[in-house]
Length: 224
Image (cartoon, rainbow, N blue to C red; front, side, top):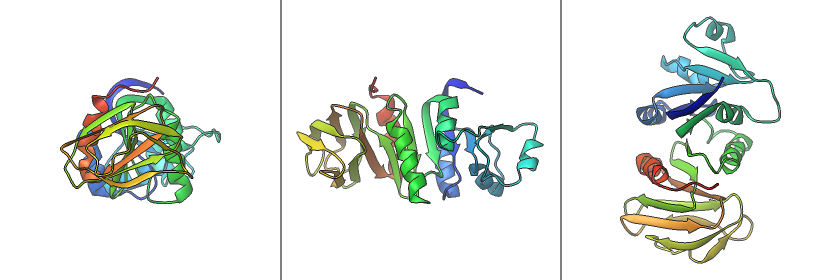
């Protein structure tokens, strides 16, 4: 199964996910796909995905889902990649919103962040209950509100060559986990920007800024 450059997709995983977060994602990206146990959330909410992907070891009511003619169930038992990565490798979109991948088991959350870092050419945003997180493009600009919290976490070493609109400027600054990070900064102007020399910076914003985050990625060049 492959969907090439569909407009915007919502992927829901089996980790903690609330209906308000789902509505926020679906409101922007109405095509919905479940990743393994993410279908359990959808069934509880009376929602249906276009397809369910993964190794299906966390999927409840597999036989029931398999009997649904309008839901495609694809079992991929490969253990070299996570279920989230399996879905990303089969579903390509201009924007991908994911929920149910943060806030639960720490190893699952770290694996989801790894999936973002491994695909710098993709525009993927993960929604938690409080944050939205995504991999920063080479030149990132966003329209935010002064006072908004903004954190930059280097999942790979990267250098901020220029920045603006931050209470604590980051340029020029080398960021690397274990050495220096950029968490708990604050927006100080209506527009914020940062330029990075390599893919590796995860940006965390309040979930209420989801639309601004999506807009910032749509207008930005991607890493190649």
